[in-house]
Image 1 (cartoon, rainbow, N blue to C red):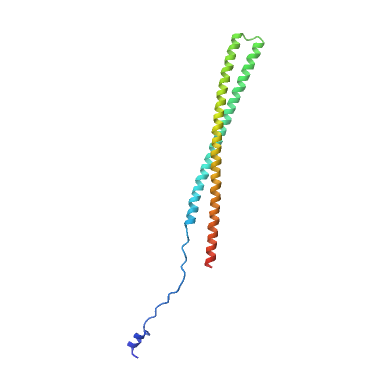
Image 2 (image 1 turned 60 degrees about the horizontal axis):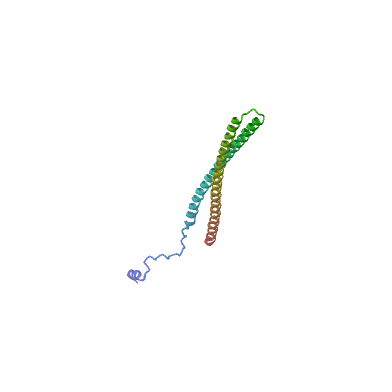
Length: 167
């Protein structure tokens, strides 16, 4: 045999490498992580909204408290003025004209008290609305937290399962 025959028979030729079947590692699916990131941002926004609603509700309650105190003070002053006028009239230290002026003043003070009471009722409505906004925002935050926890558990279980599959 000559070298030409050896080359023709494949002896002198380099052998080809065998392809080894090695499974490539799959790229990790990042969609769930991205979803968790977006949900976390949403949760932060919802928590900010809840805190703002809480502050608005507190401010509304403080204004209601101040309006009620103002109304109560006005009622007490009205009653005290009327009782003083009646007492002076009964002791005959006031004339009928002075008593009538005191009576007109009492009526005006009653009207002002009624206006203050109406303002208090408006503040009660505002306070109730602020309360409902706060509790709705609170419910949304709790629901978002629950969803976030579920997604985290799901992601952890999927990772654990993927690691078990690799081994």
